[in-house]
Picture 1: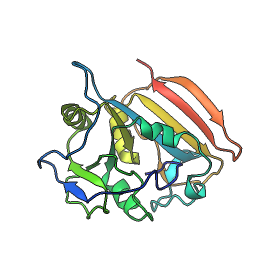
Picture 2: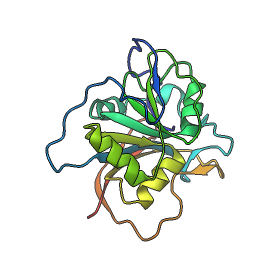
Picture 3: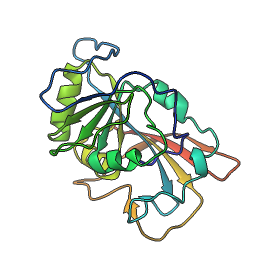
Picture 4: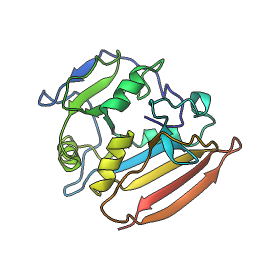
Length: 211
């Protein structure tokens, strides 16, 4: 998980709720789909200028403390129904001072059991291909999902299931680490939507996947 944002989007309340794949659906409310609609999947991520989302050991100490100045993360999260993250991202955020996703339903992709979730987290384990995950989300009535984590982002991009990318570049070179992008089966053409520069040197660019 690498997002340039405050680590605590909101107060975390309520009992811990954790379900494994195949369990009864979690008790949460999302906007319902219209017939025939599909899940919109977005990425909102921070990288070093040379394209790494974390150091090789998973650390992201090169990012601004506390997420830096406001740059649209809160507004983005307000549009999201749920998150899809990988197991390594989940294990990373468990080490933070507080659960960063508030009461947003969070689906962790893993074939193995997960470490216990923090109190207040709404969590469920899922497994399968990106297309299978999206199908399960459609059945839950989820419209907009935030995809996070290096491998998870790469897998969804390879499957053609990401619609929007928001990438915030930090003015630092770290030389090596975990890259945001990996191998893809073909070129992916992007449509530039906007770029914003911030006083601290952050540069946020937004793209849509061209159809």
